[in-house]
Length: 250
Image (cartoon, helix red, strand yellow):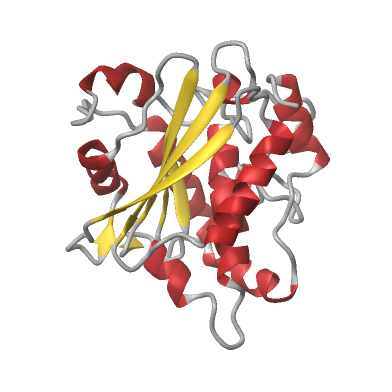
């Protein structure tokens, strides 16, 4: 039987190492900018050297609209660490639900290619988040970063495990997964933002070895659920903050 550690490591490998030919229907010219490995655009996202602003498109399948407070928390965290002098904006859009009850990363990529409308242009860098109505093929996974500007939250899994009696709040769970996956496209850990001090958890792929850090592996799996019932949204620890700062962040 595969251990959770092995599954987590394989997930990170699959979403960071796999690249296929792609065409974004709404902007075919964006392929070269948005079909890179996770962490490739870390410096461009963190610094103001090339891009002065960030626009995040959050698309959600019917019935799985994002929690507004979670998006506000994400924006606050990004404002604290990203050098975007012209600001950070988030826009949301509903898209049709998928007919699949489980989705692979390849299926998620295809959904993005068919629906994404916000891309990098001029001095604005674009990022895409998808909320699905299904679960991931690994039932323990809540979210994943799969391209340099692309992330997914598995909405049904999050809804089934938050907001109810004895469960973590929807805001805390969504914000944790949102910010964790954004941490990966910011190059954490060891995905493009060089570690200033070694803190990679070798047993869990590209994750922090500090169990109190946002970038600990549990933040993107059901292992985080018990902690969030009584605990708060985890922050980046000092090692992750140092890595962000060294790569152009505040």
